[in-house]
Amino acid sequence: MQTVSTKPYLLRAIHEWCSDQGFTPYLVVAVRGKMQVPMEYVKNGEIVLNVSYNACRNLTIANDFISFSARFNGVSRDIEIPVGAVISIFSRENGEGMGFEYEGNEAAGQPESAPESSSHDEPPQDPPPRPSGRPQLRVVK
Image: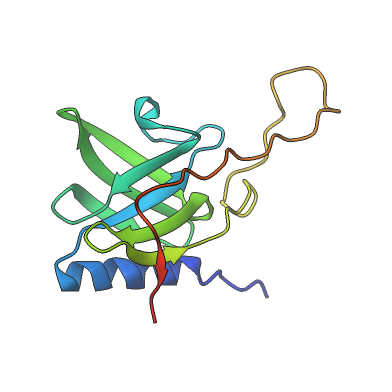
C-alpha cells in the first residue's frame, strides 16, 4: 500500500494557520515543464503566488494538485500546480512558514515527458539557485 505524502497536509495546515491569524499565505512554486501558471510572472524558474482567500477563488489543496482562480493584471486565470512543485509556504507579514524539497515530475503527479531534443544522453539541468533576500522562512513549531 502506497502512503500519501505529508506535504499536502502540512500545506493545508499552514494555510489555515495563516488565515486564522489574519496573515497572507504565499506559495513559492518551482516551475518545471508544462504547468498551468502565468509564465510571464516566473522568475528564475519560480513563481510566488498569493493564495489568501481574498486573492483567489475556489482554492483546493488536494493531495496531488493545488488549484484556484486568480486575477493577474486584471485577467482571471485558472491555476493548477502539482503539490510536488511547491517548495515553500509562508506568511507575507512575518515570513514564518515551511520549506520543502522539490519533488520531481513523477512525485508531482506529472508523467515524465521525453525532451524535445533528439539527444537523450544529456544530463538533466539543475534547478536554478534560490534567490537571496526577503522572504526568509522560519520553522513553525
